[in-house]
Image 1 (cartoon, helix red, strand yellow):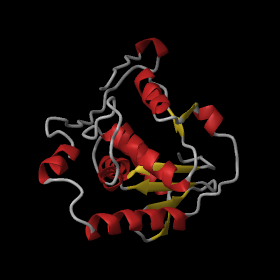
Image 2: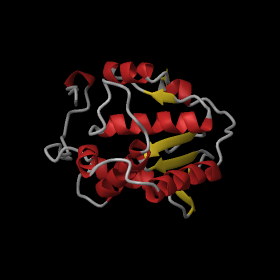
Image 3: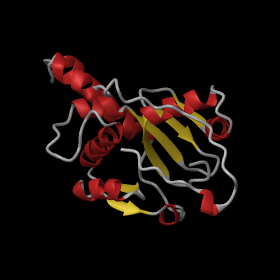
Length: 195
């Protein structure tokens, strides 16, 4: 993300996690989060957090919760209580609004399967790192976010209180950040599938 020359759209939840990690005492994670935050140059004030990278890319943090509330989920394998699924659905809404395609960097089989269900292109980090020109402008996302917020506040509630509660992450799902020291040998890597 630091050296990216392309536009990246990320969920606001990710920004809050980076901020949390940068203020914590998680050693390697805190250093990485602080480096990411220090590399971002605040572009403008709006409902959408917009930053420029030092290499000319733009990073947008969009409100995935608001986007999910304005979108009916017809996909059985996507659960709106799952933060990743909310983000994927908000990207789908964004791509439909902008009439564009989404390219998602994914490595796990489960995420790749979800991306294919949504007709997203899947790319590797190497493929994504090639330089290119962007057509996406900050005003476009700000306008979309404003329209979503206006639609939600001006109309009858789109969902009942029970449905809103269902959109919130399950209280039993907690993220715990721990610093685990490992020897710097490839054979010592222990991969954990998080579901």
